[in-house]
Image 1 (cartoon, rainbow, N blue to C red):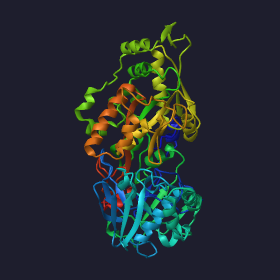
Image 2: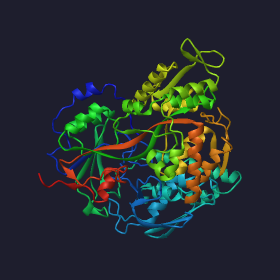
Image 3: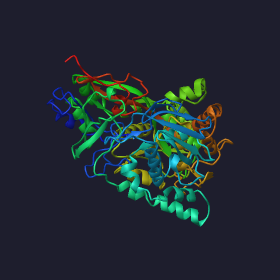
Length: 594
């Protein structure tokens, strides 16, 4: 998610002009947008394995399928390079049938060997379905080419409910371009890596040792199976032109796509105010800026479900946050509605309570059970009771630690996340009004913030959570590695607070429940058991408050109907996909009534 600084918003907006942009009414064949996942680096290779690579998902980079935005089912997809697929009930075997007409932009057909090569390259990067360690949950055990357009991927013994999702999300590259990166004996080496002993460890090292070679590979030109192919890129923009061999050309309206670079949210706001962009993905926007954007002819706002929420997370290795009464007291003092109004009025809704789940998903998972949870509505009297139960005392109108030392609450946030900074300031203001000495401390950038958070340097920090739709992924954010529970070689272990990245420091059991074990079970449990576990974990999270859920994000996007129409409807399940995928699905059409 991108939440860059908004402090200079009004000054920047004042400089926005209404002059004709590259995607304006004078350039009907060009679709103009920005990439929400990255800024453009003209020196980066045309390589989807490179984090900054000049490929654009949904336009020239293609996955087997595109995930639907279902609030509870992570295994619903739209076709991509895979026309269809079948899967066994336990996800033990996935058979993928490729689009029969799919071809690369150089005219060669897309085949199962391209998929197999792409999977081999994914193994060098590790993780998800392509972990080299065969004991890893959800790791593929076998990849078999059935015929030129059919491939079968088999899951290992440690099953995972996310296996289908991870397989279908595989980005496919041409074997005749990327295949040379894999040694001739690669698959034999992979088989050896699945064994035990010194030979297996050496084989694993050989595979992971290829990672940098794969990341740095720089093809001379883009060979795409998507609707577009990259023609050129410079520091300001990337230009993509139509792939004449795309398997569904009738669905693609634009002749070209321009992906503009940006250095921050302010630049995207300027693009939108000047009418330059045909669409823009989620962008943090304050109310005053949104008003200016809406005033531009043709601009519209689309909103939908986004399985992400924001919380205050506690480091229970630091006093007094090891005391649940202190955490509850803070929950009773924070006005979440006020925090949301200040921090994210257009792209957030106040959390109904703390469950660990986005409210939209919580309604599906918990039903009426959500009403049984403590809503932690603002209640200063209850907060006083909780603080006194924790042994905290008042001295001169300010709350002090049980030993009489001043209680200094420091809330840490990355400086570049404007809504988090605003939220933290709102919270500290509220706490100070109730006699708690609270300040905001900002980290220079997000990577530094995460490093210091993981190192246990913060007592309280902001934390992204509820990352759905998979319930396993949702609760991993609360009861996963950051809180001590780690899956290693198929075995769940718990690290002591302050060790191995465990900066949250919750006890291993809470009210007789081991939430890490239950979270791990979510990765393999059937639907009924998943619902039972989610209900238990929501109660544990609500009672013990390892985090305080502040607000749930709303996926807010922008489109302009001056040049194109056919946009997704509000709350459509495609809103989290790129406009390139919208085009593949035949949604975007050139406007004809001009």
